[in-house]
Image (tube, rainbow over all chains, first blue to last red; front, side, top):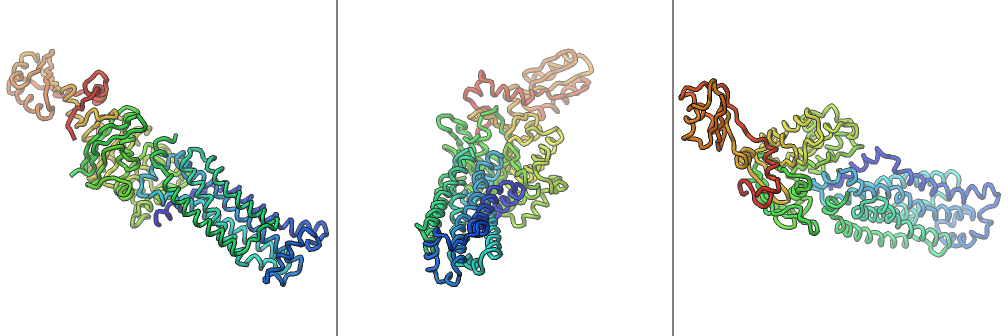
Length: 267
Length: 316
């Protein structure tokens, strides 16, 4: 653990010296935060049409009013709560976007900077190296999503109907942000680090790691179209699948990491 | 007992044999130089010794323990490997670079170890500088500090003075000599023959196979022989016969005698004594030894028996 912590510390210090790497994540975070406010607050405000009057939201409203915890909200508040909760899934993409470039460069970047060989000459095991690298990308991503979530809740508390912000503290929302999100990010990062240790071009790792965005986007679309209702139970189920996937990816990553090829064949 | 034993190391990359049946031992306090042209397998040998790549056959033992995938992480903690490039993290400060490695090696007090290394390598004043800001010489010094941070028993140095200015190169050489005093086993891979001449106890010449392995003096004598040149106050010819019973090859040229010897250090006092007893005025005595560069080139000359197949020098 000490060696993982040492490598993690190095990664975080290194990232502090290169904050530009988080620009894509910040952009994703800002879009994730702003979009639901535009839909739930800005458009009704400027158009003068309440969400509750729109037939588009009627089915969703009925579904949402089925939840006992939101029955105290008025129709407009309930629809706002639904929109703000559904867009939380988009926030999950923030750490993925932020950390992907970091993870993609994890191994190939060290190789290109010629810092990998001294690192491999230490007692560091492959597991410790990969864990340090993945955590080095994940921790800033989680910090960023936490900041985004705080801003999101603060914004909702300020401009949405009273009580709407409380729905963001329901287990479903918290599980999405703080369990499903990190596990999805972890899977994406592990995938990127695995690929990063097999290719000598960071862009390949970045592209393959970004594949994790596809199922998350599909989930978002399914929720918007009311085909899937993201309940706490479903979030827990997906999280369990992701946890298993993460263990499998770590095992595969260790097997795929070939010190010899990296040192002797990469140029 | 040898600290490091390389036994029949062979490494193939597909059909190419990079290192072929190389064996040697490295004792505590010994400085061992690995010479060879580019592509001779020096770096591959170092990587096998450092446990970074596996040999196709043969093995490496550190204090009797065989390097393997399982033992690798532990044994790597007893080796300090200076890679060809300094390999510092550019955005991190000098101190932070060292601190990460002190922690990776699991040192009990990483901060103190780093402070000691900064003092020892005279880089304390630059500890807050980012590695990217350092000159090449300073980067190499930091890399050396990193290599020795955990006080390894075996030190492997790949081209330690490559690209350094003469002053920095001298500092590195002094440090290498200091390691001998600390009883570390040091292996240097280098092209710098002058450096080898100054620091190495033994030399191995590699061209995939071990072409030669011995002390520099023994290799020189074996290939070229050694001669002692004695300059006299008068004509030298009449004193040549004084030495001929003891030395097979004695040549006189004006005021200089040139005597072929097996060992300069052992033979010289007897030569001087005999000449003085015979009434010669000895003006100067110098050893006429082939430079190591000539030894090296002769060893790698494809027309010589050494380069073709044989090994000059002792068997390990």
